[in-house]
Each structure stands twice: as structure tokens, then as C-alpha cells.
Image (cartoon, rainbow, N blue to C red; front, top):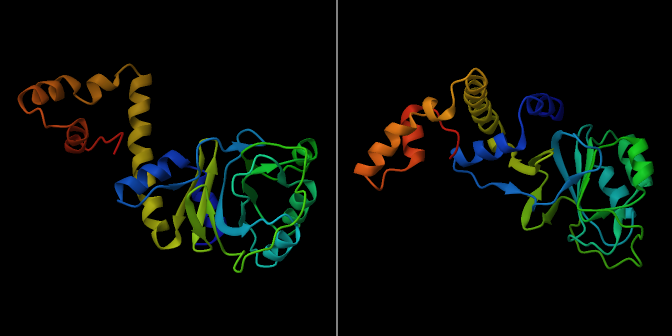
Length: 235
């Protein structure tokens, strides 16, 4: 699957649906820690991850961009630092010139007003006026694999990012995850419409029947009940 196909499919889904699909397929949920924020509200992107570790100098970003394909998402590991910004307007402009779809930062950004004018989707954990004070020695293999808040990703991963955060899926599982997420979306959309039309979840999910069975069989769970109805709203 290429970046264009991935982005088009994700436009009809969300990160919660991607995460739910992973659970249903018994895949680990590989996500960023809570608190990730979009610079431009409503930003939503999906594409191949282009991971890079930051060591205090922009040159590592320039090097990583040489490997970029249109629609890639530059995923920057700045170790979650909140005492400096690791990207600003020049990095965003350069990334856009390579066709990079977004910047995802495990750390902070700066040049906020200019970044908003540039319009490239930026996702980070905050903003800070100061850039790095001095470069640090770079480790080998600083491009191609990173750890973002406890989640290891590499160039085999696709990144999905929206208002709820970021989720990563290995390319080997991407088709199954999309198919499952679409199924979940269809079920939940129908349930939501029925609620709007006056049929609440209590009746749709036969909640009284569930309570009766649970009274007789205390080990019976709501998720088992939902699976029997083929109306799973949770996994």
C-alpha cells in the first residue's frame, strides 16, 4: 500500500477505529503517549513513518529527508524533552519541499505563528521559544528507527494521526487493520444513527437480557454478550 492509498482510506476512519481494529486482531496497540496536540486543529494524516532521532542539530533532519517519499510522515524522537524545541519554520518548509505530509514530534516545536502560516500538519507535545543549546554526539542508525514515548517504530510502519493521537501499524498488517476498522465503523455508525432516531443503546444491545443472564451466570461479561449479538462497541 502506498501513502496515497493509505491516506484516502484513513480519511473515512479515525485513530480510535484503528486502535479498536488492532485489539480485535490481537495486535498490540502501538501509540504515542497521551497529550499529543495538533498545531492546526482538526489535522488528520496517515502515511509511512520516516523516523529520525534528534541530537541538537538540523542536519539529521536534512539527511533523513533525502530518504523521503511523497506523503511520508517525519517522526522525530527528541526524547519527550520540554526544555527546548527541536523543529521550527525552516524544518517545516524543507519538509514540505520534499512532499512530506506532516511532522510528528516526541518533543516541542517553536516558531508557532510562522508554522501556522506554512500550514504543514505539525503534531507535538508543546511549544518552547528556545532551540537546542548545543548538539550532542549522534548515535549510529539515527535514521530509520526510533522510540516515541515507549513505542518503537521503523520504516515498516504506517502512522495514523488525528485529534485523538497517533497510532502505528506494521505494513504487514495494514490491510487487515483497515478491513476490520471499516467493519467496526459501519456497525457503530448504524448504532449511532439508531440512537439519533430514538432507539437507545439500552434497547439495541438488549441490556435487560444481559443483566438477567449475568444474574444467573456472574462470569458472563458484557463483551461476550455483544459478540453474541455481533454488535461489538468495545473489545
